[in-house]
Length: 102
Image 1 (cartoon, rainbow, N blue to C red):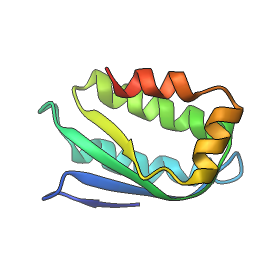
Image 2: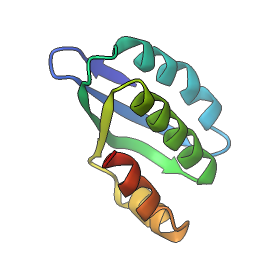
Image 3: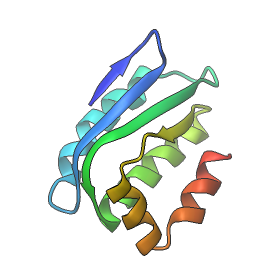
């Protein structure tokens, strides 16, 4: 996971399935501590996500929701086709659209 303070952006990468999601927690916590409650709008580049399943979407949704409560607005950008397809297959498209519009 990479982030740049000047651009207020971050990049998610790797395995977001049940096997790999636990390895995403520490980097997400690091990013969470990076932004304060300044009502920042942050673009999250998802192009590095290699694979994702329901467990990964649950982790991602929880993280988005927690930061939203703190006043940080996140926009998921550059979703790989595999992520979009999995999101549609699991019926999560509306859920994430609603989360991002909050």
